[in-house]
Length: 209
Image 1 (cartoon, rainbow, N blue to C red):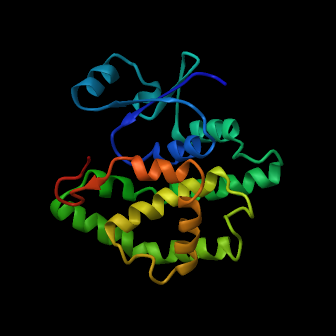
Image 2: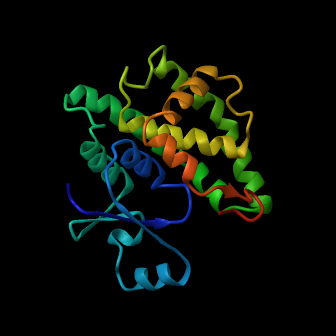
């Protein structure tokens, strides 16, 4: 197994699904948090491919892009299907989560009037996307069948963050609530969710603690 070092901010955003993938696959890695002056200095020195995070050092080689890193780690964790069509189904769900990731800055960054405006815009379109997820999930245990794939974690992160914006957001979507419960009980994932930092101060002074 390669030596993995994941670098990201101390927020729940582009690296969250990735960390859940690694947790469920019991893939060992080192997490390095960054931010503030240290991040600014490293960025100015060209430390990050494409000048953004997350990045992962894999046996000393630094690579970026959250989707690419998630797929790589999913393969290490046994969460990426070998069949091309099954892989496409997993990719579809992962990309749906990426498409819905506009709530990341709303939860983690925006405050005051901007927060309220962006929250209203996002939540206004949320029911339609949630209904599409319900349809795609159907009666399956996970989005791609009886076995979880890396795509499930992408969508889990999105819905988990949406609940920080509105705890009643999934009242009309009980199948998604049940699915989230199954994901949250997965080996490794359960322990990760129980020990990760809490998100507090959403809309006023967002931070983790």
